[in-house]
Amino acid sequence: MWIEELPNGKYKYSERYIDPYTEKSRKVSITLNSKSNQAKKQANIELQEKIDKKIEEKNQIKITLGELLNAWWNQHKVSIRQSSKVNYEKLLKYIRKNINTEAVVRNTDTKFYQDFLNGLTQSYEYKKKFRSVLKMALDYAVDMEMIKINPISRTKVPKPALTKETYEKIEDKYLEEEEINKLLNVYYSTFQSVHHGRLAEFMYLTGLRAGEAISLTIDDYDPDSKTIKVIGTLDYSDGYKNAKKEMPKTLASYREIDLSNRAIEIIDELILENKLKFKGKTSYLFVGKTGKPIQINAFNNSLKAMNDKLGKDAIKKKMSSHIFRHSHISLLAELNIPVKAIMERVGHSDMETTMKIYTHVTKKTKASIVEKLNAKGK
Image (cartoon, rainbow, N blue to C red; front, side, top):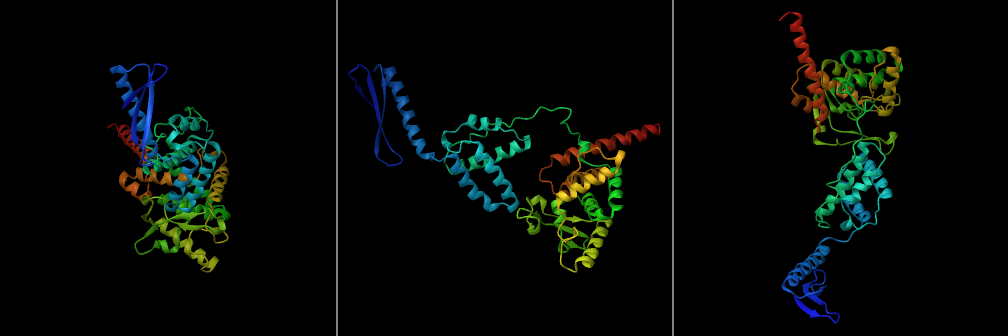
């Protein structure tokens, strides 16, 4: 470091460093009012900070947020399923439209991303998805040494206030055996909905997701071992007519399910019926009138219609295909099946819902034991 006295009586402190871009010598300077020892110490600190910043700027590549999103997406999309690509592209389209994509990534901070999240009007779950996409892109920037830390890591997705209307009891996530029987009775007494009834009952007996069940083919069924292999779901991203089977989302989703006698009976009925109707033109098990796999939307609509048919006995729960999967978890919990075995059977990589249902049902079972003991005066 060297000092020059300026005509105005102030002092210019300078230091040289090697420019990391050109590897040539460069100079940084600051001006102070004094050349005292204290001023020299201050100058030394400030000059070093300037040099560090210059070097850091080289390590942190100048890339805009829009360019980063493109770079991350080009790398990420090759490792995911087609249906997932479609969902990601929708999220990216919205992000690009509603955030400043010209912002230089190394200049963005936590507040920049928190302001974006605070401005979202979508549901809490959707907001989490937007944050997840941005976090993955910025993690990629950290990995590529474009930035040192991920500025979105300390952001929070605003949670909606919990009200009586939005609070969903755990009992509303699954059906009791009596409710299942009521629904199936309506399905099987309505000729045009029998195929949907079989799908509903099969999901209840196996815990399969709707997408997993409708993607099942004859080849997935092994009558000798009385099992069925769950090796994918249907991808509708190119339209219903062009739906094709794709690999499951997680390793936990890939599994082999042991079948009960009634589940086997359903499969045998479907194989025979499809053979007579479609003369070998379809290998799928759960199909509609055209031989194409049942559409999940059509199934959910039929589920609501069957429930409406119950009239005053209609089930007052949110009805969708997923309720049968949750009902299967409840059924296994009532049978005292260990939670680990349940997890393996239903393929839950996220155990939160399973544990909530399992804990609730086992508590009910324990309470029932006490009630029975009390009734006997024990």
